Length: 365
Image (cartoon, rainbow, N blue to C red; front, side, top):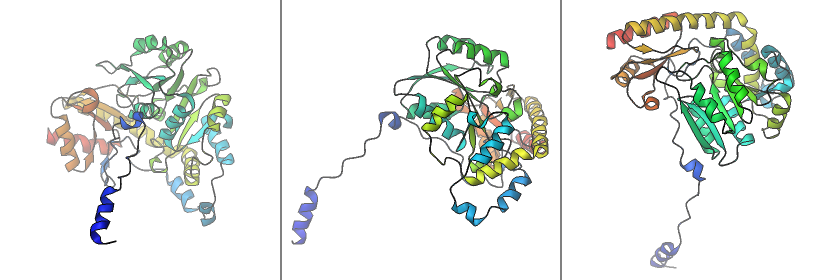
């Protein structure tokens, strides 16, 4: 076959058909992950531990052997010890590859396409993300201008029996903390709704629904090791619920969701109570200083039960975020979630880190 014939044959071949994505996936906006190159900067943008994990974690990781890395994870002993640390039975806890993995599992187990989910917003974006992937119908209620949780609106929507209600407590990015009385009102009204109470920031608030899981079959609580414990890189989370609920979710889960390094690190992190308590106390002191300092600089600051504060700088907030980044200080611009410039979420690090931040803001405004 000569060259002309070959070219003619190539023109006649049909191009492969484009891959067809599920409609629910095609509509999803890309998640805005942190930019690369954050190491060595003052990381006040993603609510991580700003000083690093306990030295006890590094010690146990150095003892990991080549044989351990060559083996699939063995969970039984670690699950038993971690469950005891949380005050639950092993059958009431399911370890996951970060809380994102826990959310994905919830959607796979409980949601059919078209089912409704209730999301008080603004909140952790992954609730909406995984709901969209699952093809769920999202019903949103809004925090008010003072960042109060929309209790009455939530109670009204619960009367329509959505399949899942997501509550971050404290909430990200507002910092809002629901007290036990409000949580109980919502759980009492959620007779035909699974309620996820996401307690990623529990260490900084002290309010938890975890002791209620045995009495409330529709309650699921999540925790993470990415915040106070400083293990974000190892991706470890946990779901807590009544034993029969956990058993049902386990049937749909992968056999090895969590790596062995995360297990040994988590045990060491929880075992070093002195380090953990000192870090939490430092953050709480820093959070108070951060709130006062920002108010003195003219920003509106909203009450927070977490390791961050949400501040409204008004026009110029996004510009301030960029200027701080030029100085090696990273904070999170949340303007898109509130429909206007000005809203910035700032992690409370150590007291010294907060002083550095406030000085930089004072010089830039």
